[in-house]
Image (cartoon, rainbow, N blue to C red; front, side):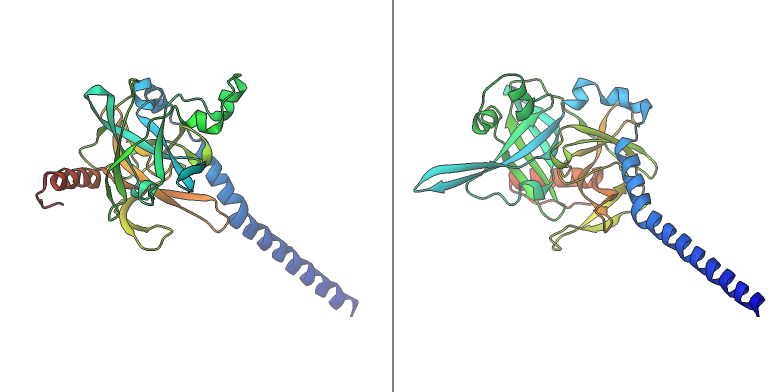
Length: 295
């Protein structure tokens, strides 16, 4: 009889141990593993392309797009509010210091009458850094130094936009790749996630075929390519860069990404280069007032 009780206790102990082991596995899969993966994507560095990425002409082609909303009362501006900033990348320059940059359409699409978009170039001191350097500026005075952007063209169907701005500084200009990046291609992203500025992340193309991605608004569905370079809110509009041709080229524009139920990064999504080229051709055709067939 005592032998039977001992066996029952043994079985109960084994069952409790199995339940604890299962609980630990669930915690690892649901909580720890996603956090480790996000940290890996944040901190991953490809040394073979990092040196090329840090060249001024590459870094300075990236911009921060800050949304400025004006609140009026009795016909005069009462209050100015500023966003943390989104991202963009310069692909064209004209004489007299006029630059054209690609960004995501949703970055600039919700502009109201009293909305402006300000361009912070690479190397800009933050407001906090400016204060720490001893310059006494109000927030309005700080942002007044940056040029305003004009929205040249915006297409919600592919979530792309072109903005233009003037700058006396010599900024970088990057070409758009002539062909789409293939799976396992090494990439780099320079973006402004969650208020941070010009953060470099690295990864690879992870999808071997286009993926349909729907934004948070649930209205748009875009044909995208997935990658695992870390992105977050504020990274929208940033360029995805490849060095396979021997120089930095734009192989995509980030428009969003996926997270798990804990908000941990899982993947980024970009509009690939052939769609960017089609978008620019469409813009030029519409500005010239005639239609064209696109791929």
